[in-house]
Amino acid sequence: MLLERWTSPSGKRRWLTSLDPWEARAYADAVSVAFPRLQVGPRSFAPSTGPGRPWCAARLAWRRTVATELASAELVIVSDVATCYPSIGETGIRMAVRRAGGAADPLLAHLARLGAVGVRGVPIGPAPSATVGEAVLSIADAGARAAGVVPIRWVDDVVFAGDRDAVLRAERAWRTTLEELGLRENEGKRRSFRPRTDGGIGIIGSPSLAGRIRRGIIRTS
Image 1 (cartoon, one colour):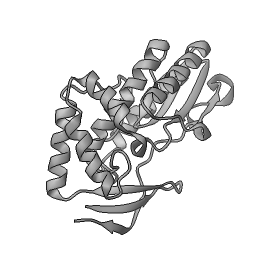
Image 2: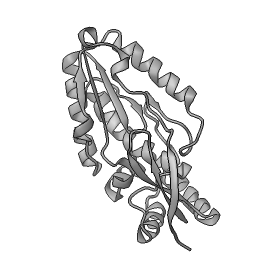
Image 3: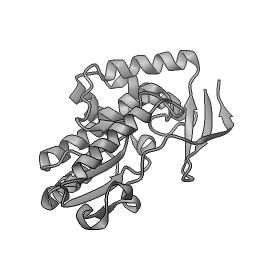
């Protein structure tokens, strides 16, 4: 297993995990057992694999959806999840696994082994991690939807747009559900605006997976 530091264009640093072939197979098998019926959020957009993957079509679909909603919205709130994948733990995984009708213990055991060699939470990089993240975050989507607005989500970046009161209720429900999952909102990135008076989609930054890999720091056997 190789851990590499990845730096985004904005300067955000993350540790990417590159699994050895046998680790990758075991991880994929554990995720499949955990989530046999993945419920994807109705307005969730993301590439299918790790950084460096094709993502232009998904980004275009995301931007079109955001633009459509902004055209008639009274209020927009933009936010994301603080250190999302590293913060996903047993509580969120068990909640998501129950929803998917799977078995959590094989996945939790595998994550515990990765944790013993320095991986926090769910490893960033392996394709199955996208399944784990989607399964967990779709629960927060459902909480917001029940409160009146379905978030438009790019991985863990979310946009709430619509009627003012519904947006406020939905964002609050999303934040509360995150806490139940053992996650938290990144309050430093939360912002709101009125698109009819403050501008359009240009206020919302496009999701980007471009970045650079720095030299590998840790290798385990």
